[in-house]
Length: 281
Image (cartoon, rainbow, N blue to C red):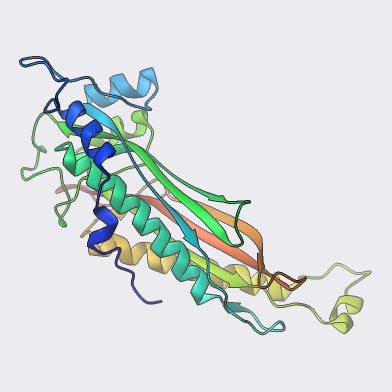
């Protein structure tokens, strides 16, 4: 699958966002000299205290969003295949939302973003429109990492993590440093079964090998892409991996035509450590 690049325009912030971020950083017109600026956070009380205990100070809530038109791709009804146009749309829209969230964090001078939530909502007001939203709490490390260096990743971007406050604290205490959230996804068309094959298994127990193979193919593509993103961050491993299989019906025209597909995704935060090997769960 072709790599996507969100481009410079993806990180351009609105004037309202810049004003809000300046206030949070203490450089706005309402900031009081000598006082620590007010921060906002979507962390729970327990998560907030554990993040502080881990040595990070929340500086503000950051978000990025993109309403994206999902394109059309024709397929052969009787064969399993990836719908690459739709897979590419999922990647590009996700990258736009994440890049804008990271831009807000950089404007706050943050070292990372914790408690990240990435949500996808399909809109009712337009055909094949989906909104991708990335939200998290920007944090600043009060001390450098134990192994030296900086908290930001090798792309000079704030690290991103969707771990809970408890898991984040545990990893930091164990000597790991977060690098970023990585994701692999695949939109896959499951072949239609012929009437003859359906009748042949109507009254007996039998594996539906078409569906089994589709799940295996989609999962393998998603896993490979997630691992590729982790390698680009020079990570030792990926923790907290989640696997989601979602079924969709994608509208092709305004008539009755439609296509059914499976969207398979894996994502999780990457970590590094100078003295420990990586693990994946």
